[in-house]
Length: 194
Image 1 (cartoon, one colour):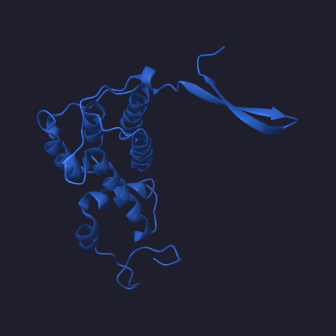
Image 2 (spheres, rainbow, N blue to C red):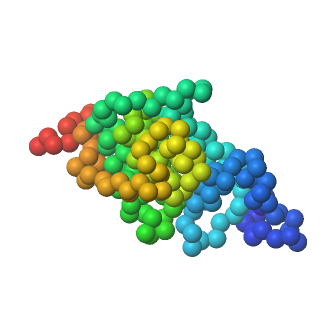
Image 3 (cartoon, helix red, strand yellow):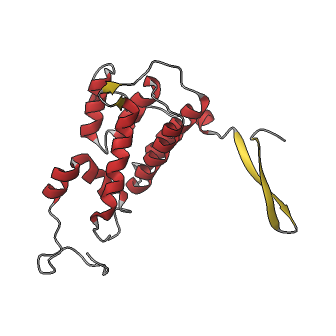
């Protein structure tokens, strides 16, 4: 669209063929990108510059399942931080889908994936639920990951995961220390401290 905010039209020579995007990035990337652009009810300028970020997100998700050609999903018990990240995602997605807030849901997926990548999480109990929650947004890659990871049953028949509010609570809170109105430091304390 260039710098001007304008609608796609043949007369403006700014039409983007979705088949070209699908051929280059895949259908799931296009679906996620369209949802990530902003609220559905608002008009948005089409720009393919941001589609690379969504494609990197899907590749990063694939990296939790595979390292090269080797499946890395383990049977380990999830940690508190991994469960917190998962349950926050399930809660956000469960609340946003009926409200058609798909852009904030895709953002929540990216935040969750960054947290799980930092935790080096590749646990089956976490990844299985993430695939189910992401499947309405990126069904093709989710079906592939489900099948290759050997999760039980079919993905389309898997129950929507329930979130546990207690697992969404932060264990620690950051408090800013101010002297004379200027921040002099920050401390982390337990969230249940009086």
